[in-house]
Length: 146
Image 1 (cartoon, one colour):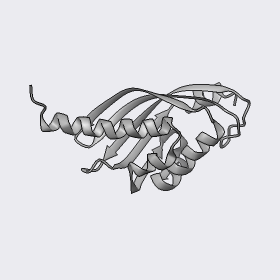
Image 2 (cartoon, rainbow, N blue to C red):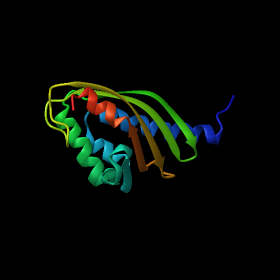
Image 3 (cartoon, rainbow, N blue to C red):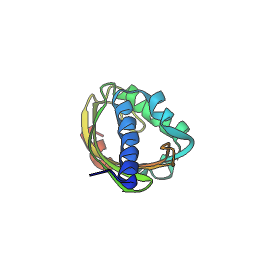
C-alpha cells in the first residue's frame, strides 16, 4: 500500500525529533542546535518564567550545563508521535549521575532517572521552531538528594 503525503510528513517530523534526541544522547549541543530555527523558542515548563527563552540561548545554556554537571547523562526515547502536521510529542527517559552543582541543586553524587515529555513544533522545512519540555521537578530534586 502506498504511503500517503500525510504519513510521509509525520515520518519526516518524527525523524527530525529522533535526530535531536540522538544528538542529545551524544552530548552534541551544536548538532542539537543545528536542527533548530535560530529564532526558535524553548519552555522548560517546571522552571516557570525562568525556563522560557530562545533555543539558541537558554536551551543551549541549560543543555550545556546539564552535560557538564551530569557527564554520563543519557536518554531513551520511548515514543515519538506526530500530533498534527507540524508537531511531535516525545516521551523520553533522561538519566544521569550528578558530579557538579546544577542551578539550585547541590551535587551529592546522586543518580536520577526521570520521565520527560518533549513537544516539538517544526517548520515546513523540518527545523524545530519550538520545544516545550515537562518533567516532575520535585521528584528529580528528591532523587538528587535536594
